[in-house]
Image 1 (cartoon, rainbow, N blue to C red):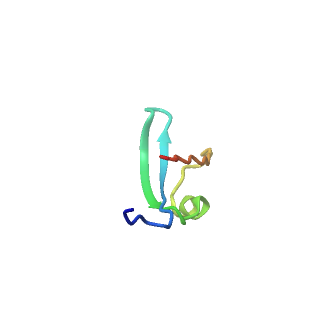
Image 2 (image 1 turned 90 degrees about the horizontal axis):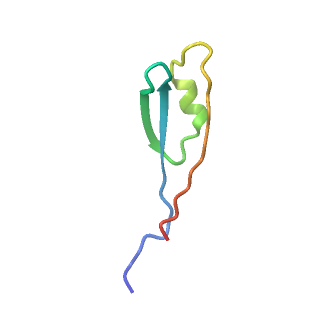
Length: 61
């Protein structure tokens, strides 16, 4: 048998969507350990922004 990595890896994509043009206004990629709230606090979000958090897991097995 071949050698395989025994730990999990993850990446997160944080996207800000501009609803007027339906285009991303920012994209930030972090490792999987970075909490969404930490990233949101570091961004200059416009007043009255709606923040949505979602998790998606893909199992390629």
